[in-house]
Length: 92
Image (cartoon, rainbow, N blue to C red; front, side):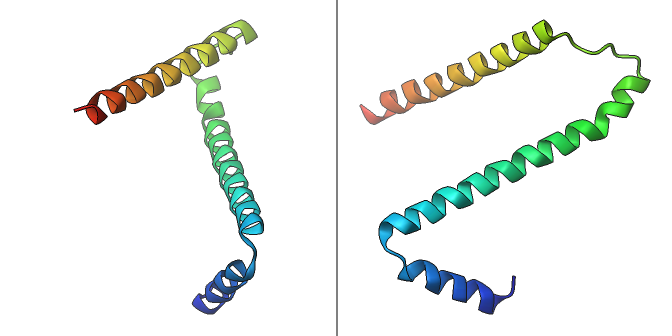
């Protein structure tokens, strides 16, 4: 997208009421997340032949679910630790 097209898009955004700008922002966020998920899937599919060639057995659904559960628990723990850290530093 060239600079002129970017400027035209910005002007269109500025002309929208705040509620519609928020909708545009939500849609852009959705597109970004979708692109990241697609890129992650592409990376995963790219290594699939190497995993198969290495003789690594496929994971069962139970193993996959356990991995997802552990990753989510780790993410929650990090988020909670960050919140706790933020609360402790703001009270000083």
